[in-house]
Length: 145
Image 1 (cartoon, rainbow, N blue to C red):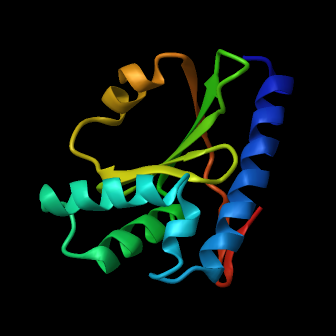
Image 2: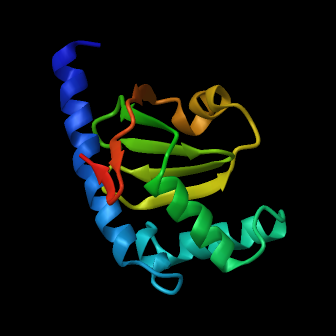
């Protein structure tokens, strides 16, 4: 990948990540649903995580998702190879994964039960180029972008 393209992607990520962090600061357990693509998607994922016993309750799901977005250990930017499809960002923190669109909306939030490489090779990500990104620097007040 050319440096120019990488810098464009990194700038795009920084913009989206900054927006996500601003929204995360304002959200609570009751307004968390607004971070998702649709309320229906949120409820579907919440029910699935409860059914599989991946989370204890609604607050646990909220906490794991917010922690992963706020303090990721690994980040991948998935660049779409088709112009009509939005790019995605994968945040990984410990044993939890959050995938968001490049508009900042959450697509899914789930436990890491397979390798990161398996997630990147998943059929849902076949039309994307995975690009590992450096972590934003963190100070005592939060992340500097």
